Image 1: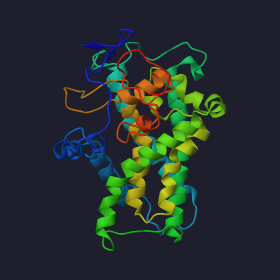
Image 2: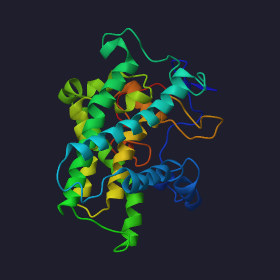
Image 3: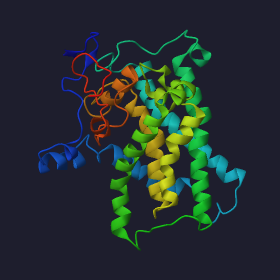
Image 4: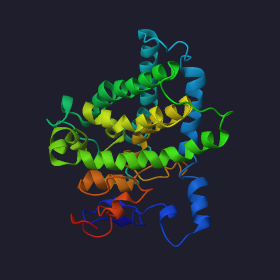
Length: 314
């Protein structure tokens, strides 16, 4: 079992990037990373692609109904998003932090969520995180969706369909994860500009030991910036399914990435965890992006978790 300098559990292997961006070229490793279990596509992105399809066909008002803003269909969208949040974030919190099915096995920080601290609303890390996720995150996520479906219904955004361009339609599902990570890196670096870090992003960084609900616990202005990755669909032709796929990945995957545990979990079956991002919560000045595209390595902010942490660029 590997331990860090504080005696905390850590993965046996250092945090690294996908083989797509590591030389020399390794076709088998790249294919496994794309299509193997726990890789880019399966199961997470396939699951969210199916959720987006289901949302569009079964959980979303037809575009003819969204031409005019109405409390009915807008309220239904907000309710749908809150239910999705409670299903996804609630699942990880219930199993890992209430039922404690893993115990502390694979937990990056051995401490549980904080209580009795004045820095948190209600003096509770979990309640504080739930508040910001549901009271700020869900409405702002929904506002972007409302704006998009209203614009799509009124012909104000470029649309693409499967029948018109099947190659581009499929390609979007592969492009979106890379686009999201790139957008996240640069908006995140901006939020670490000292004035913004103090005024806005510090709300998220109240969680050096994050749990599932920490993932979307942000200041409202940060939520606006975080979800601005969705604005690409207002200028680049896409389908509402692509938009919902992008939106739901952005809103829901932080629960998994902030779980505080290294997977696979639940009998070694479900890939979860993000030690790369946990190191950012712990040390603040490293690993601003994700573990797919090496933006941090290219721009000198990568820390792999090996050896004492140094704040100088690596």
